[in-house]
Image (cartoon, rainbow, N blue to C red):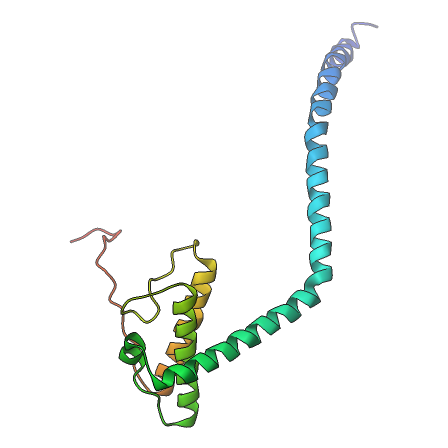
Length: 175
């Protein structure tokens, strides 16, 4: 009878030798899993706190945005009287048209905010181009001022300056 069940007996012996090693391996994973669980619980608690503060943060953001808009308008009105060289070179004098004049004031004010906030000097109205992924606040300010300038250009029917792409190697075969 024993010969008939030899395969099952061999499988049982193998399982008996294998199960304790598997249990030890799984026990070794428990500390890491516990740390991952604590980390996930902390992230969940942070997300719940952030979610609870979302209305307050949204209100604060709206206030800051309003204050920046007002500051840009005031700066634009002040600078309309005595334009700095880079602004005059890029945007010209204030248009007499209503909407274009308002857009011009906004563009002058936003470019002045950007130049002052990030200590930009020189002949370029917005200073240096933002570095990729390194200048979050700078890039945001640069983009906002640049968009305001583009709105003025569109309102006045100006063509945007075309950027010429520098020559580069082609990935294809040359003939």
